[in-house]
Length: 68
Image (cartoon, rainbow, N blue to C red; front, side, top):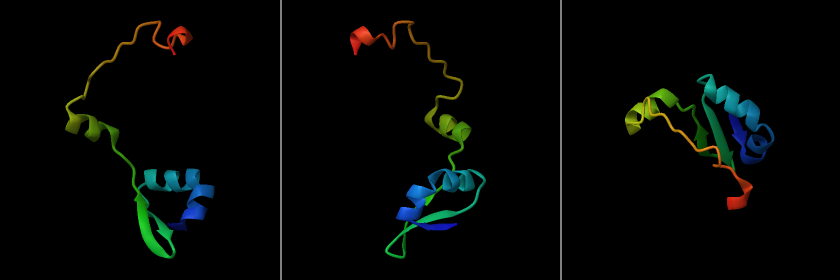
């Protein structure tokens, strides 16, 4: 799939879904390839960063508006 920046903005959900299915999605600027959307494989990223299986626990007051 090839889209101009304007089309990519209007059809981002569709483009992201296509990329997640493994389809090549290229966004063009003035008719030239500018960026490519690719799906991230979360498991491989977590392994590469060494955080596979890491559990994060937040306190109940984490999103307390008094501290924002």
